[in-house]
Amino acid sequence: MGKKLLWILLPLFVAGPVYSQSFDVSVDERVELLSIAFYLGGNEEYSNIPEAYKKRIDAHFVRYADHKLIRRLIPEYRKYCGIGWNAPVSLALQLEISPKGKIAWIPNVQMVNVDSRWDRVNYRKFFHKLNGFYRKSKFREFYGESRELYAAVEERMKASLGSKVESAWFDAYFGSRTPKRFRVVPGLCIGLHNYGIRTTYRDRDRQDLYCVVGSWRADDEGMPVYPPGYYDWLLVHEFSHSYCNPLMEKYLDQLMKYAPAYRKKAAELGYADELGGGWKNILYEALVRACTIRWFVENEGKKPQELIDWDRKQGVFFTDELSECLARYENDREKYPTLACFMPEIVKFYDDYFAK
Image 1: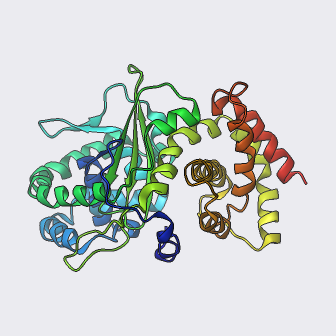
Image 2: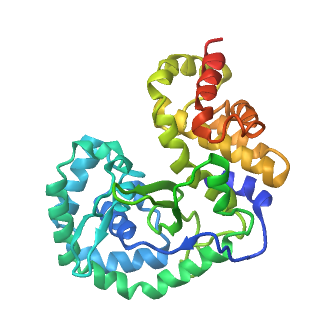
Image 3: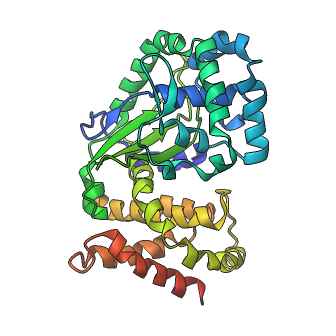
């Protein structure tokens, strides 16, 4: 999300600094570990860091820049596997750090939530180097010494959340009954970017849903600024990924055939895929963004035209029409108790839209 869009949208979301009780808000050691490692390893998307925190990182970790994880492994993963952006964070949230400082998979975690770019990586080798870096760099010590800064960031994030978005809305809208824990995680090294990620388990009827939130500017003290009320729409968008992506994955085989038609229509309309993930990513984003529009209709009484216009500029030029398709879902919940039940109608939407 760019700065220009932020200033366009900011008037829509301004609200008083009301604390939201629906979401846990906390910095996450696992996210910071992977984010700092990929910053040190040269991934530019992890280099836009608030100055107060960046100074701490540089001062503490400069002596570990030659560690094999940083100097060799991460650059190789970036070059040969394309690992960057949301991929490190998606992995981080499937891991645990034991009281003794050992990093490993969460017991019985489902690997399906790890970004597919990690598929070509030797996890045993990566975990060995990551554990070595964690110990040698005294990362736990760094994390503890930064606790005061993290607490200040958490309070700023809590104060920015309005009271409009309730976690109960998601299960009600999507028709899900699986117990969930909703967590908002300030990501101090991910810059302008935001990620919606989930953790699911083979032995637990529960999911952990994450909205990992970046920061786009800092104050004079080098601390991140979170405009009050702005993050309402972002919570809807990112948490919706945890519901929409698994639904869309089941229909990718039927919808990938429309990639050429999408490119042709985008060219005719003068749009381009600015998201960079190709047609598959457009499919994920379109459903999420259409659901976000429906949240606005329900809670604000109107469509967010600025968001719709921004979707078009990014190449997702049919979210408004897809949101109208979702209106039929909302109006007949007896027939469609869950969005999963309505997904064949979403497929028909694409059949009609791109077969023209």
